[in-house]
Image 1: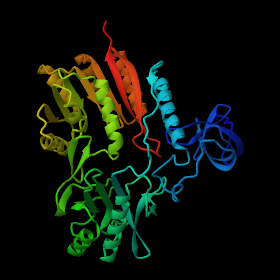
Image 2: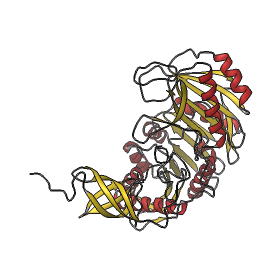
Image 3: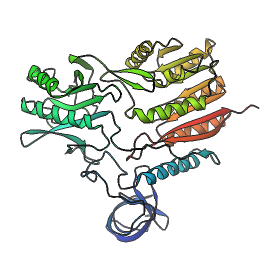
Image 4: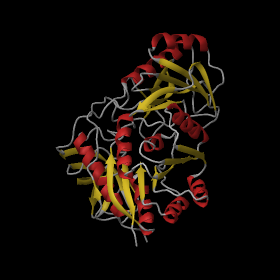
Length: 458
């Protein structure tokens, strides 16, 4: 039997937006049937055209806005509507923070069935622009020259970009200069369709505290035409360059990096600080792109850990050791585990760089290594998790429940998987005490959270 939907494709209807999705789309409802519409804000009234219908929801686009939200602002970026990099520039910053707090509350209730927990107002930035310390942009050919920018929303068409308002200005300059130098010296852009051409991506990293710059040229070919001339011009034109690196990716793939990385000029790493801790950053290191807010995030994790100097702490998914090294300031001993061998090498190097000795790092899956530690008698008073977007592995969650640390501090970049995992930990004997969202990525829909959980004594 065919289901009769309240709207059909190509219908024009008047709606009021009642919510925002996690993608930043306005939500309108017709007889309970949700329609997702880009650029709509809660409280606004509009005429929309229905452009797609599914059984459970549809999509539309705004034809005319009748009433606008007091939180609507004119986006500062001239290519905001074409570019897929930001989703919320049309919403005031205070509006963004309120929307992110609501998103976290709603998801915890809907997915985690976690009611009556305090979700604090989001910790935002004083200046929510120009915060990213890493730019990574695809390169294309147009009318004989190179272009570089972000992909258009839901496509692989490159929007040529001179400035990105959430990037450090230094990175904008670096990308533009490197693009022009490579183009001048006959380097052709990689073509996804033909699998020909050389230059796939340009990446720039900037040490906000040190002023050091790393440039990474990601190429399809091992050879870089006119390599010496390109290096000479880059080093002459860009102040602060400490490292020029080539990464070679010969595969037909959307994955940015290939296996082989070689230093063309200068050092293998640049340095930067989060708080008082110094980090060595290589071409492929995972290093937080907003160090100012990373400090806010980690200070919150440290506060929730409530360390006195007597505790053993385990940091699952430790990456290059960023949270682990923060925790060593107040912990007796910290154990960090991470699946990526290069990240653990970076973590060990960063511990050495800072003269930190009360930390131990291991390579492997957290869900395998931590049970092994547990069997060897290593137990945690506090366990910190900062998993990827997919959340924690079920085996790891069960290990936490079996190990019974007094506190779990969960750092999350995805409210949906956070809610799922908190539900499992609550069912295993933990209580969610409070949640502190942190805005690491202003102008986008992303929100990070730090959550304190404590073991319920029976």
